[in-house]
Image 1 (cartoon, rainbow, N blue to C red):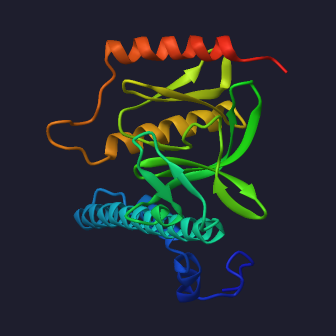
Image 2: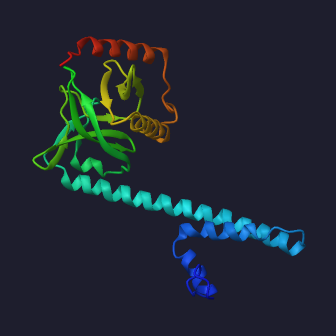
Image 3: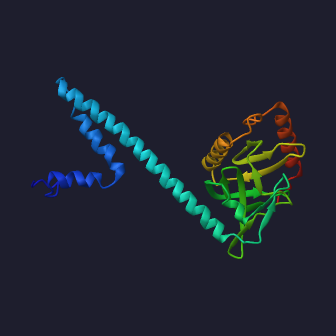
Length: 244
């Protein structure tokens, strides 16, 4: 073959160029599919088989992508764990203690990235947020190590059970994380953009929906009482914020 397009490669070599990466298989099959349309019975059969192969390959690619992402998230969580101060510990709202080793115990990392927490006087604190399979964890750097973030004596390890997630009114980058109960607590969190805020809200909601629940409890739904608590706490927070 003298054409510059194929660079003097034979048919086998040309096919190999496409199949060196699994993500190229759908491209190859899609092109073949375009040339197996016809009225002849054999061509119709070929078209059907190639179409089935294309669908199967797409499923394989999706599975591979999922496994690669899972491996990367697992590696990232171990990396954060290795940088954690072994003495750092945080008491959750339920009074359960959450330590460095609890990051890995039966938990998966779903998403992570930099966020900001607003304290009681309206100042923003830079944190590294981890969305795990059942909790949201906020960390801060101290002496080149991670420790659990401190915020007005409030817990910065938040259970996803009975959590309410809401946008901050008139703040396109902000969201509220509200733990329901007799003494609800609310964290005001800020992302770098509206899109990033929306991503966090969506992933947190998906994690909440996928959590294993007791059969009697099920996935918690928002009640009128939850809404009332949300509105009350939001007003209290806005009333105590001092503009600096």
